[in-house]
Amino acid sequence: MHANHLLENLMTEFATNGQAVRGAWKRYLGWITVSLLVAFLINNFLNIYFGFGRLSSLFTGFSFTGSVTLAIYIAFTAVGIWYVNRTINESYRDQAKKLHEFNVYFLRGCFFAVLFIGCIDFLLALLRSIDVLKFIVGESTSRALGLGNVVGPYIHIPLIVLGFIVANFTKTLGWTWLAILIVFAELVIVISRYLFSYEQSFMADLVRYWYAALFLFASAYTLYDEGHVRVDVVYAGLSEKVKAYVNAWGSYGLGVLTMVVVVVIGFNGKTSIINSPLLVFEITNQGINGMFIKYQMAMFLGIFGATMMVQFIVQFFDSIADINGEPGKRDTSIKLAH
Image (tube, rainbow, N blue to C red; front, side, top):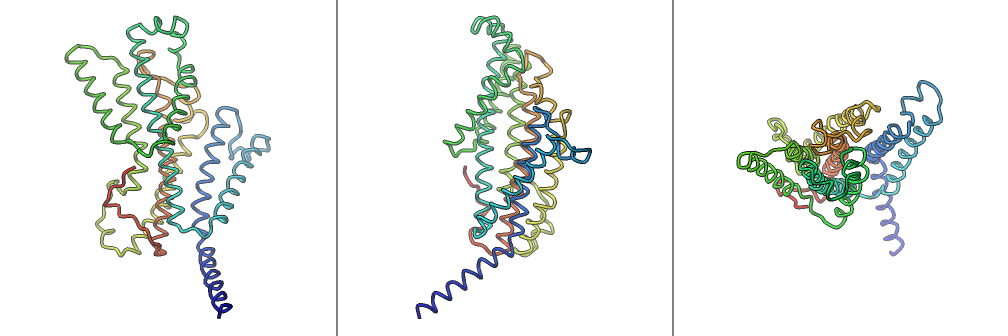
């Protein structure tokens, strides 16, 4: 009897594993897409700062840097395949949760980074505009703090690192607080303009900076909560399983591929819309009277594309879980607090 029971358990386990393996191509599709995104971003960094060739350079002839680029793509694809094989028995729901939690952490770090940079850069711009900064830090340091290629690497980047450190110790996304700060910043502008007849370009820069972060960074989490505007005339009348199929292949076929276009065009060489400002730490058109955040606002587009792509893959996995009838489906009518 004990032997028969053991045999039944083994057969059940093999059947479960077999079913997981047969449906694994969707896991490979999702995780290899994430792996290729990471490889693309690493290659973009090496390309614009160290002159490494892009993957397309291999079609024009052999080069060492082009070979390194190819090796990066192959290595990250292999990592994606390895991870799927390692977690083959995990549910799609669990895979989606892991990917979403990383995306939330990354966006949380971005929130704190723009909060810190906005406050510090606003303060520096204010001190420059009233010609007080040189009395605080000295003439030479004051002149250096008027250069984007000094403020960027020596002030902004440490604040970005600090933002991600803080994000590791808090579970609050903070978009509501950022929206309140934007309203407060607008209020300061109104009071300053109409009561004291004082207005500087850095005041409007702060509002634009935080507005851009709010809408572009929060977009991925809004997708998770299904908060984006959509027309449900046909969709609302479909069965739950058909809705799951529509969500799955709509997420990948429309969502992921659209974000691929955004990322590839945005990071397409040193003269692209994102890379060009990043290379020189481009500042506002208002010079030293403005905030030094123009290059970051260009980067916001890249963060938007990458985080939305990851979130679409999360939705893809969640929808596959719905198709398979996995437990734990979220009720998106209940707003989740992070």
